[in-house]
Length: 210
Image (cartoon, rainbow, N blue to C red; front, side, top):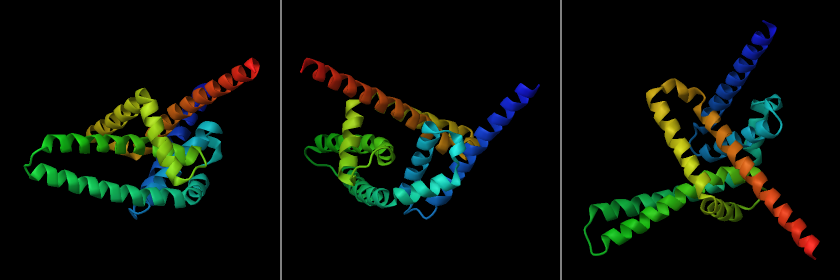
């Protein structure tokens, strides 16, 4: 009976933590201009959950991560807004007009949209995981997305799946953002561990050969 109650309490605690984190994220996103810093804080919080545990807290950690990554993430948000506006305008112009080479230009724009989406997926992972400049963060986001296409496709599939679930089950919106961030960062964390282990093994092999 006690084991059952303890397990039930743990489930309630975990569920409550994800709901509270999700609500914090949505609340900090309300000013719109803070969407990128709020999302960076979301991923920063789940990063600490994965590395340390849920006991690390929610509100205090979220606010710390919000402040810590504010400058870099607000800069990324500014660049992303400009790029999104340019791509949207270009797509609207191409779709509304007929001209020679339209298909080629459309394929070119779609290619850049895909790259934009790919980089966006990894952007927040790298903002909270590495201490890099914004330029290097964007560059490495692109390299990660293209170098690990299987993970990139998996992340895209997860995002679409969550959107479908939210559409049919709006209640899921209460904790979907924090849960998705937790799962995605968990996978990215394992990916970086594998990469670091591979690099260490290669370094050891080179040292032994030398």
